Image (cartoon, rainbow, N blue to C red; front, side, top):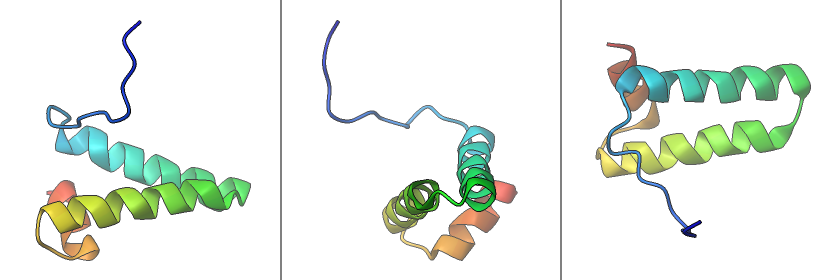
Length: 64
């Protein structure tokens, strides 16, 4: 098996990304495991930075 440090999300649909973000939020909220919320926040921070927008605007974009 080939090893790699990073995974590209280039081909992921907006709907799939939104589902991942919502699942991390839901899981973190209901299990009280901070790592899920941190991961969601890190993903949103990185993607909104790449899109040159705020995290809130990026989530709105995913919801369209």
